Length: 400
Image (tube, rainbow, N blue to C red; front, side):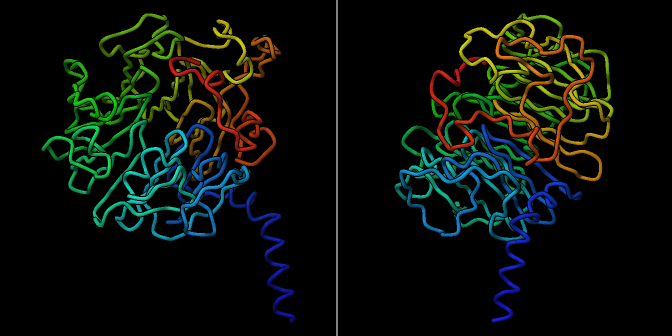
């Protein structure tokens, strides 16, 4: 009986403090974000937190895929996903995919995953293996399925041969040498041998990938980020963006759409870039900058965001200058700081009132990113915390 009391005591202690201590611990190697959840890897172990309305956290105790009328609780702190040996994780909207010992697993929103798994279900609460291969390198859910890269650089996407082929992962093209992939709103993209390519709806409409316009003398691309109608990439430390610019998401000081990449500022020290919705963030010399819409969620009843809530040029988003990675979605942003420490925040860079205006217009420092689970981080809409899906009016499809 004594060992049972000890076990119960340890469990209670861990439930009360393991989450906060783990969130503050160093050593995280990758972080990704969906619409209302985030996942990160530390020591080969995978953890997720945030909204869990469609099982996107993958932390269910049972391995079944059955859904119920009740949503699972919002997870405040990083929660362990079963298994060891996780090397990559990717999130998009309410779905998550990960690579574990070369094997591809996905979970969450079953809209497209059910066809891939061959099982009826509107949500998958636990990681489900995709296929039998064990040579996957990266994977990412998209608006229309799943895309993944093999270790040899071959790119596979769900339903890449047409609408009637959603139950398999097919190679997109015949080329190998893809180095990275990303997903935006109804747009997917990747870098093939240093050259970026984008395509719509995961080739479901049989639209072939299109190369982004070349920039003479700029060198090969090393990073690619796609948002809601816009994209950005890094070449030799220089940041370029293109596409929709309604809210300054291209960072060129205007709201003019660009059909070809335009350089953002004059710096050649950019090391990472991320895009989500009409928001873009990047790391320049260890400092984190964000631009575009950075305060949505405080004034959802307003159809057009006030000019005071979006920026057309990069703005310092956190006072510290030890950033190494950043991920952005419609709702939240998470990144890695010095020593592999997690830091997250909802989009507002400054305290925004119900009228959509900064509470303190004289503030010169943005609100700092904080450890997941702290009260300052819990700024997600109450609907997401309770597991209620965003309504069509609360999340526009073309803008914030």
